[in-house]
Length: 356
Ligand SMILES: C[S@@+](CC[C@H](N)C(=O)[O-])C[C@H]1O[C@@H](n2cnc3c(N)ncnc32)[C@H](O)[C@@H]1O
Image (cartoon, rainbow, N blue to C red; front, side, top):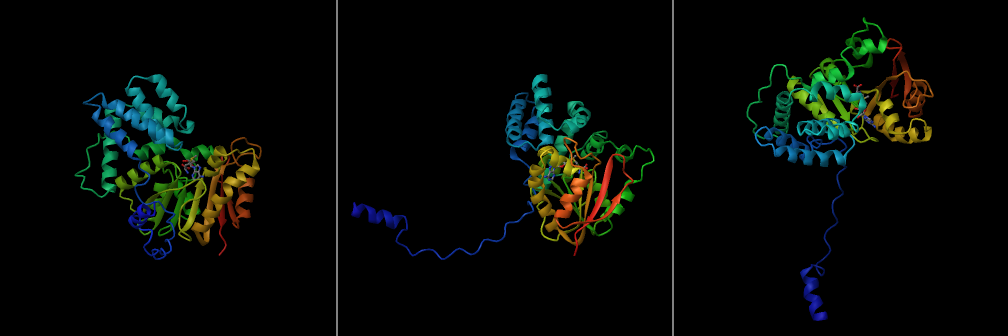
């Protein structure tokens, strides 16, 4: 037994001196490196979808890969839409509807407008999308594929998902204040570093990027990686290198300490309240507290937190009233400096400062 055990211990290195203590681990990066938002299965599905033009059996591959992706994460609007589109191509309307029932109902118009277009148009966009992924991975991808003139770009999708006349909707006036006025109010000025947290399809991200210019920076953060794809796609097309898409968690916006001058939260409290149980203040507070801690950390002293949200009554079932948002922000050390009334009756704009 001993004769057998000794060589075994030697083989396992048990008799060698203990290894030197490992150096302390570097602090974990909170900003996701580029590319992590892409899921291999989703890209595989897109490739299979393109192949299916020549080989109908590839549609089955695409369905399989997408079902894996959408089963894993509830935050994949684009992939859910893609999965529904594949079911439609496969002639399975019931399966298409079942998938759409799981997608964000606020984005139903995006599906109707884009994914129900003729398949060659959707495939042209997917081809361009895959090209972009290739470029992101730093490989030699050749020239970008041609897109038909009228192929809707993601930016158009973003515009449509909220209506091009969003500010007019908010105010109920056709002559609503221009977006540039709102951008100046929130501090998107040349050279500023702005975090568009919960950026969605980037309705604010791109106007902010143009306002801060190439010397500025816009972090578009999201819990839904499919929106980050859209944002990267548009930023690439528009040559807006100041835009960086960041995958965040529900509790942490994932930006380094004092890295931004402005944090914009447009209709994000509404989303948090919907994700949580808005009627239960303790639950909301538990959700919002770590989230606001991470916002506070990311803002430079003297920086601004700008909240645009629905002017909901205190007892609204799926929203947070402005007074509740204000109380939560103040409990985190923010000071209300201004409230804009120009976007009522629908929205309120609250501008807080992180005292220095
Ligand atoms: C109503 S959309 C608003 C999108 C964008 N801010 C706009 O105004 O066009 C709300 C967004 O918040 C995101 N979201 C939900 N919970 C979040 C959280 N805890 N942190 C960051 N984003 C979140 C959702 O994925 C969704 O895209």
